[in-house]
Image (cartoon, rainbow, N blue to C red):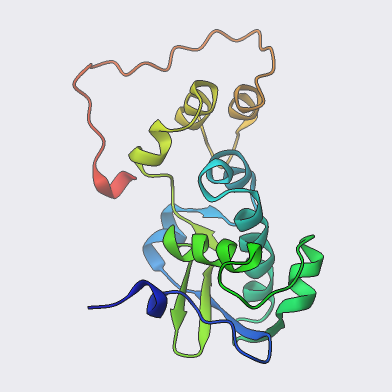
Length: 177
C-alpha cells in the first residue's frame, strides 16, 4: 500500500527540487493551459491561491525546460510571498501537497512532474463552484470565452442566456469531466 508521504514529493535537504513536465496525451488534447484563464476562473477555488500560483510557476519552468530543471525552493517560495521552511506543514509544503492531491503534480523518481495542461473540472468540483462560475463554465470555450468571462466576473451583460440542459435526464460521462 502506498502511503500519503510517499506520494508527496519530499523537499530535499538542499532545498532544491527537479521539475519536469507531466506528459498526458489525453489531458493535453482535452485540457486547458495551466497559465490560462480557465485555471484562474475555475481551478483557483479548488486548489487555493497559493497552490494555483505554485502550479503556474512550476508549469512555466516545466515548459521552458522540458528535460527537467533544478529549482531553488527558498527563492521560489520568496517569489510567491512565502517564508521558506522545508517542513511539509509549511505554506509552501501544503501548496505542493495540494497540487499532488488534486492531480496537478506527482512524484516521478527524484523529480516532480507538473501538468502544463490541466484537466477540465470534475462534476464534483464544478458543483462546489458558485452559481455564476457554474454558468460561466457551462459556456466556456477556449476560442471565444467573452461571455464566460463576463459571467465569471459577475459583470452585467445584455445577453440573455439559457444554459439549462434540454433534457432533464442529461448526464455527463466521466470521460467528459
